[in-house]
Length: 407
Image (tube, rainbow, N blue to C red; front, side, top):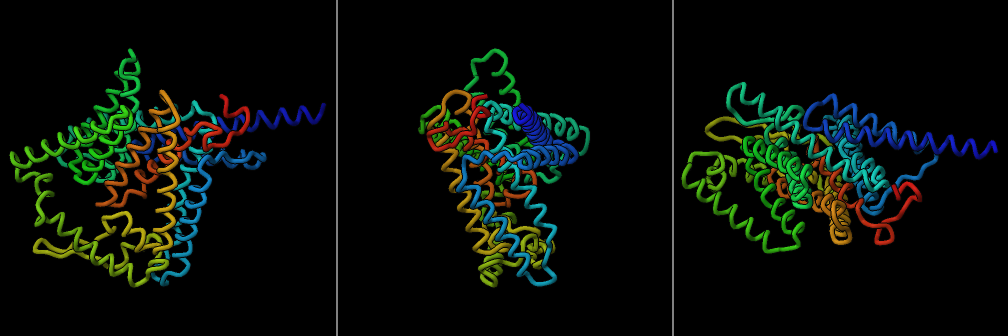
């Protein structure tokens, strides 16, 4: 009798901690683009709930075990890069920052043992982006008209990356619930507000990523590849017409091989490649790029480069081939899991995986021109990887956890 009571008490404690973890994730996913305080509070609550479950003896729910191992290997490679870095380039605090960025993958994957929470987290991501968009638009229109930024993302480029990924998820849910009396208009509002503010950031790389991600999202959601070609052709036509009508605009300048934006990136990529070759195995140390003295100079002055304007070159420079390689393995395995979920699920379950796939594609394409695996876009990236792959039905590539999976 006593053992039964103890078991019942333990189950209630685990249930409470599981709910606490999910609450923290909702706060995190809503607050990521809105407020640093909400982001920090949500992450702390989620980690507390997850840690409490581990202390109670609960085994984590990890549907993508191989991807999780690759992610842990990436963090280990990053830690090792700090150990072997030159004394002036060692930044151990960056390992904590990296941990905050990647841990949502584990937290979200574990929380999605309860399948209905996938939809809850999808709503949280899109709602947070829509709320941040509205608040940013109001603030932007009250001040000088420059490039728009979000509440907790004060740089227009990562703000656009975040909005592009959230937009893909919103569009996937909109396609599924277009005919719904209540949900359809709400998804449409979220997609419209995020898309409008994305344009107002005037960030070219993320815009390209958003176009590719939306093409993938719509084509996958409707199971018609030709829609991707239609969207791509329409986007190219709009860009060409816009560039012809407004040759002095930022977007038009990006299309010219002689533009300053292209010049900065090609010069920085070349110098970064030399830095990678200097220390190919473990790099110069996580978080060290800003101290490596990469400077772009032209008639307008010197620009100190804080990142490599490319996810893979930046990662290889800081953590070497070992770090970039393990991150690449994680991405491949994660994408395979998300694609499998898109194939094996139906209805809203499938819409979540399709939207996660589109959001990941947005960030991968944008990552050709900037670093998209750190800060808020990075936290969203790892969250979407877990959210998308967690939809694989049990017995078809996933493993259950008993009664918790049935709720």
